Amino acid sequence: QLDDLYLIALVRRRDVGSLRDLTAEHLPLLRNILQEGQEAVTKRFGVPASQLRLYLHYQPSYYHLHVHFTSLGYDAPGCSVERAHLLPDVIDNLAMDSMYYQKRALTFPLRADELLLKKFQEAGR
Image 1 (cartoon, rainbow, N blue to C red):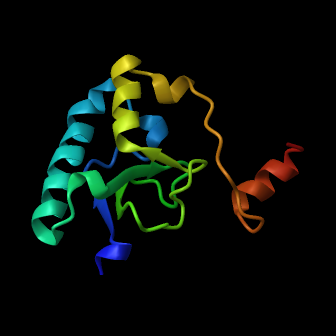
Image 2 (image 1 turned 120 degrees about the horizontal axis):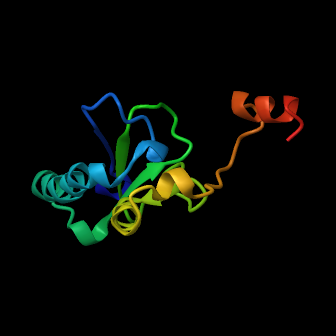
């Protein structure tokens, strides 16, 4: 069903775990995911690039860089602004400042049952 299209592009490189690891060095990789991914989805599913949302999570559910592809009409879990970082924006930010994601404060939601939240609470934060 194209209404709830949800695909993930996994990066082969093992040295990039999350958004925080990205620098301008990764721009060719990210641009390739953007261009080739959109073309593949359009060819395979007939969904034009203008109808796709491509994003990375921070904090990710697993630390191996991956990009989510969803149809714009699908309200996928984790596609909200607090957690999802649009791939075109990530590319622009890194083109502007190679160390953007090492410097920037990133806000993210935590569920009440998440181990990371427990760690923050134990640390008095």
